[in-house]
Length: 135
Image 1: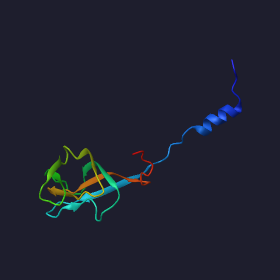
Image 2: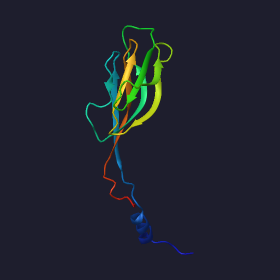
Image 3: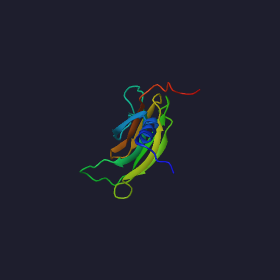
Image 4: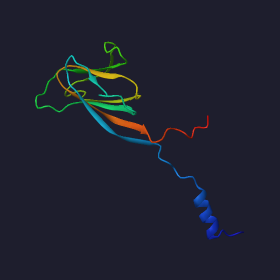
């Protein structure tokens, strides 16, 4: 049986590829208030992918029993809406969601009801320009 010396062990560690962080990420939050004016996901174009993870009724001092309906429009037509969730105080106050939006997508949130809704999630931004693609 052969024995490995310290040089062989050191060589194996040196040649091991080191993981390289490829993305930066962080938390984002947004409050959507009821009303006729839609709430944009972004106030200006960006380079980030934004992922929506949760919608929750805002804590308020006045409890309203009315259901709030959160919907979304993606693209230039803000009148084409899709319902994300119905939130009702005391019954269904938060909802898990898993939707990602690219940097160039125009996204607006719409809310009916009397309670504001807090949206939370995370953003991701590439650290590099993907120059090391093999294609």
